[in-house]
Image (cartoon, rainbow, N blue to C red; front, side):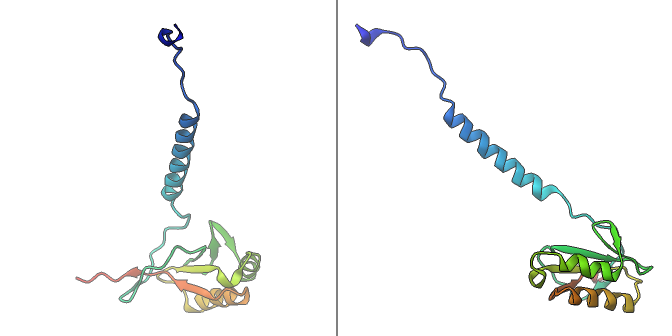
Length: 133
């Protein structure tokens, strides 16, 4: 007579845990793409040949007054060299310099020299695409 006995219902928890972990990973990945890069709002120079580049590992901001900042912290060129040299692999560190529209060319060259002194070989300049009327 065991055939007709009512069985107690069971809730399988292992598949539910798998689904919850999958959802956790999904939401973490989506959240990481929603966080914007930190930086200062600047009026970048325009260029007719501007191209998209992969996201940089380090973004250096050069203001019009010649101050250099990374992630909101102001550095001298010597401190910038030390900061970039501390990175695990400076030769493969991608640095983008966001120079203000009215920044001095000599200050830009000083920042590029600081990057080269740290061993960084991949330096790019940020520019906005030129608007064609």
